[in-house]
Image (cartoon, rainbow, N blue to C red):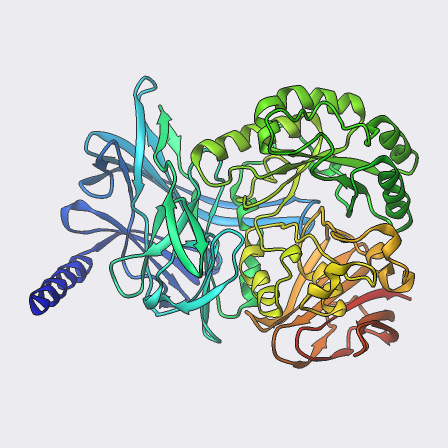
Length: 622
């Protein structure tokens, strides 16, 4: 019986790969720099496939495309009925990002297709080093339909190391051929020192979140609609949610993205790709949105007043009153229009306005679903500056469709927004500029180790901003002893990790922080940037990032579980000008040493970091 099973598997795989050998190229799109090529092919049964080439290397073998709608496959029996091409060269201002301008160059191919009496299009955009594609389905407006499955596959040509994770879990590096669990998007994989890939999704507004699961072949992956995974007793059990995608009339899927680089830090050439793929804001000028640092305060008026004083002193922009200000957050009887007696909203808002500090209020998903349309005009009347959404459904079509509508409404009222828990960005901050940040990350409140902190820049942060909820240590908080990286690394990560709305002292109170010189670094730190450069690094090991705001540069360098010794070239500095570098680094005694150097563009900055440590630098012109 075992021999018969092995023979059956062998024959099925032979047929499987023989089918790919019959694919013939019918269309080809090449990037502006000539180094990235996306081919469309047709195989047996008129099935449609794609293949991606980067620097003359096949990244994927022929990989399936298509959808399954109402039980009918749109992956085979496909006839191409027309095509259009676009050569797009555009640069747009983006004052809320890692760089103040975004270059959006791509070549686009739209294939008009028909399969089993259904019309659809495949939209393909090829960038320098990356590709994005999506499906547009054309249907009669009166016919309710369901997408049962997205047939997109990624049949890769190497047995990459995959950094598998789920929602806010730790990362598990494993060989692609041995992958057992689903991996969230974006998923990063690498052949270290040779090739690095990121597979992701953009512009997901009315669809299920997708994950990657193992395909039929040794190095094959395929998309799967959202899986909710439970971890119990070190065992994983997957629970499928309601994963059918319902629509009526025409429909478009999110973009599927593949980005390629020859170095780990090279993947950050595409960290704005989701922004480029999302629709621009219809009525909002991103320049009017106010980013800034946030300090969380205890749930009472006196703590809020003290928090405002602290925020004003340290150049923060907002205080956050978190869960509990209107009662127990998960109770349907708790009313987000009625503060508890300990919280005097008018007094807090008035005091904050006098010091130019805004108030952000937390509202749980339970209250949001019940009263969103009530609280928005009410909070505007109160003078509230922003909202933090809690425990939203960031996985199912129902949840993401609700969230898209909610973000639009919040944006229209001019509230800044931070979406918390497992929702990850897909570029919609461009569509709704007031939506400044989100969680979707295993942040500092989980006390991650240095391996985790050095994987995040190459994985989750490729999708966009994340609220890491920095728990910068202090001598009075019992939580500080849980932190697994040094104070110097905490400072460095505040530069390395991008968020226009970062929470800095998550588990601390203003009275806990008495070393003014040390925390002055946060006073000077911007949250959006004119220019960013990824200087050096390797996934899970180390990273160094330089960012510029006005004429001042900030550098964050950090390391994982091993020491790092290197020299950073400062050639990005301007001309023959001299600068003063203020260096914040670990002193070896659980404190920060501050020293100053004179530097210029010909200078090198020596890095000697022990494991789980970091260095933050401010470079000011003299």
